[in-house]
Image (tube, rainbow, N blue to C red; front, side):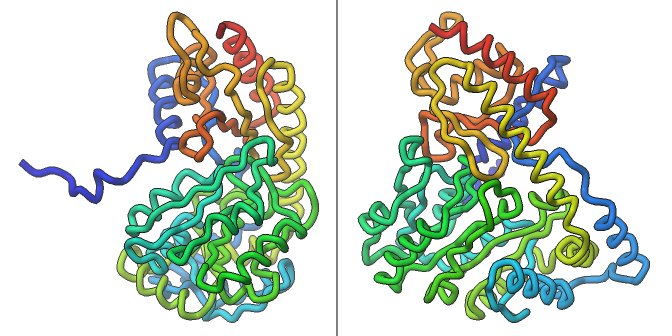
Length: 397
């Protein structure tokens, strides 16, 4: 009898994908389900990007691409990083991957040795700890709840660093909280890291374009940080290109070379047509990006207005991405339909069954007392979903 390897058994399934799967199964059974569990823009890719893909196919960009990525696209990424972020990179310091997630696992596997410690501020994107564990590293979690606006401090970071610390991974704007680190906060973090030159940084900036509080700031822009930072970004969120599977990493040449070797083993180069379309995304009309950002901002404001009418929820106003991450501790330990709601995950299952709304429990994000709600959907759906949630919450006592 054959079975999957222990390696596969050790991988923890993404809770966001698991909840999306449960919601899909209930839909297939004929139930009316609203999914607020997945992080995907509901917009279609802007037309000029799709047209660029068509032209790329006509021009013959249908062959194997280099593992590092198509040179014209890497050059466009360099121009983007220079013009928008003030960061100087050469094409040899860029690698294009099958989404930002692929870029992150490439970097983790290229940096971490068994036993290395990796600082992961919570709330964190669900896959970070699993990636570290897969690489043989040890996750060191520092938590920042709603009382800290979900943002870890320089003091917390200083306390967590040990001689075994090899890496810190964080996102800004953050998935799941929507928190955005400002210039002063990143400056304080950079000052701590400056004292610990053995610590590398993976800065996940995939939500850069969905920012409601001013220009995006990358930690790589601070003195001494660029040489020890992997800036990870992509086209999925800001350009509504989730299905195109294009992400990229900008970093020191030694890391990009290591990632090239790793990626060459697993997947080789990313989709050539998507890369050529990516040039149009980065350098073409940016008005659709702003239209989508404004739409997300309007949705954020509306869902916050509605969630404030539900007693017991505590949350901070998210400054980016398209999530709200309320603390639901008020409801934990209470009963609903003769069932003890003692975890956020049980609460989410109750909300799925009772309200027909899919959310994701906070344990997967490092804060067990919270749930993640995505507002990457239209206002009418948001209003319907929150009305159902409000009714379901009222039955918990």
